[in-house]
Length: 95
Image 1 (cartoon, rainbow, N blue to C red):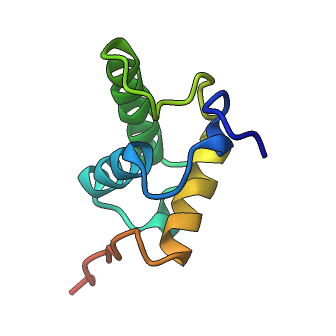
Image 2 (cartoon, rainbow, N blue to C red):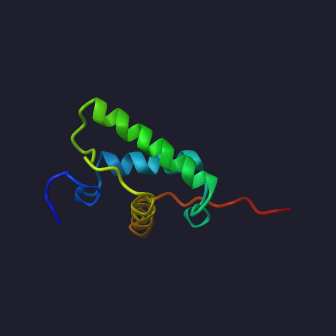
């Protein structure tokens, strides 16, 4: 693993990127398991990329220089969930 921030996976845990990803995930308000291949995930991904562009514009150092793929974003979300850092969201039960 590279020690710089030249790719998506070189970003250390507990940084601004993970916080951003968690915030965008909360805004979508859908459980992680229900996101793949949905418009909700597309919305999450678009918002994440927009926020990353804003962070790069303001010169924040924790921003990766390469754009994460959708698969990388989903994998990062799954890793955050497994580590207990991703909030648990539930779909409402149908009545």
